[in-house]
Image (cartoon, rainbow, N blue to C red; front, side, top):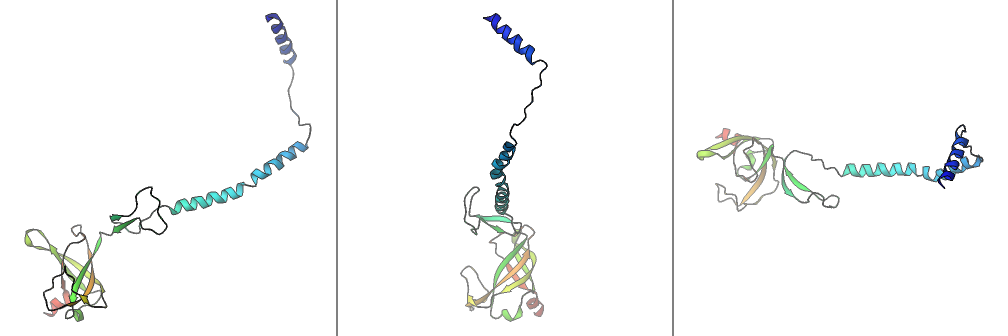
Amino acid sequence: MISMVRSIYYQTNSCCTGAKISYKCPDPSRKRNRKHQNKGITSEIDPMKKKIAILDDQLQKTTTINPIDGNMITKYANAGELVAMGKPLYKLANMDEMTLRAYVTGDQLPTIKTNDKVQVYIDDADGKYKQYDGTITWISPEAEFTPKTIQTKNERSNLVYAIKIKVKNDGYLKIGMYGEVTFEKAAAAK
C-alpha cells in the first residue's frame, strides 16, 4: 500500500513540475454581475457617512464646557447619569469677583447710584477689619421689609432697598460672609 501511494505521488509530482496554472474567467458577464451585486453595498456608503457625521455631532454636543472658572457649589447629576436636555448638572460660583448683597434705608437711597465706588469691610483677626474696594452694580427699584438676618442702625426703618456690590476677591472672601459698607459720597459729604 505504501508503494502504491509513493507511485501516485511521483506521478503527480512529475506531471506538475513544468506546468503553469492560470485562471481565466470563461464568462465576462460574471464580472458585470459582481458589480451589480456590490452596488447594493456601495450604495449604503453615503448614508453611513451621514449617520457617522450626525453621531459625531451629537457626541461633540455631550461635552460640557463651563462659561466661567469657579468652584462647584451644588452637584445636581453624577457622572454616567442620564439627564434631560436643559437640566442643570451643577452650580458654579465665580470666586474671583464676589457679589455682596446689602440693604440701604430710604434716607440713604438718594445718595447712591449704580457704578458708585464703595468701601467694603469684613472681620479680620484681632477684631480689626479688612478693607476692599467695591462698585454698586444694582439697586432694587422696589422697597422691601427689613430681612430678619440684617440689623440696621436705624431701627425705625421698616422698608429698605436691596443693592448688589461687586468686590474683587483676594481669596479671603467666602460665600455667606457678612460685610459692612461705607459709601464714599456719603463719607465725603460728612
